[in-house]
Image (tube, rainbow, N blue to C red; front, side):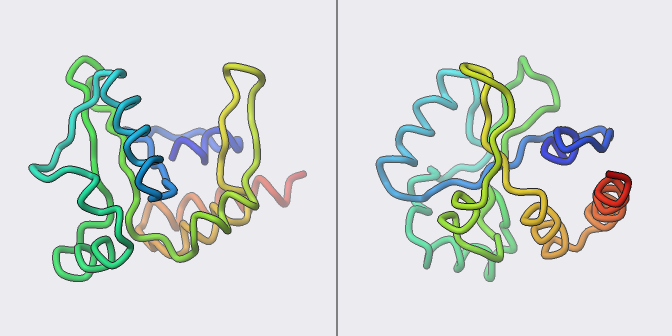
Length: 141
């Protein structure tokens, strides 16, 4: 939802979805930063248990857990979700990413087209609505 907003479609969202490179040191750095920001795991198992792609696939298929969530009680309803179930590799998404903002306010987003593909893969009603809005935005350019 946040990426949809940044690309120009206004809608409410209560979470930030992230796609991580699950290389061990990267996951450890992410955990250090998220904890410094006051976020805690919503699950009784550490994210480091899912560094292995096999473990992530296993938890998705056996428990339908598609994301690992973090919450911050002072941030209200806003959660941070690390997605486990995406149709393409992190490397692919990183290669195609777009950069928004400048200097210390710079963020990396999945490309417009990759966002649409991720939304198609999720196939929830909100995702279908987002796709229609994003495609309309693109056709208006």
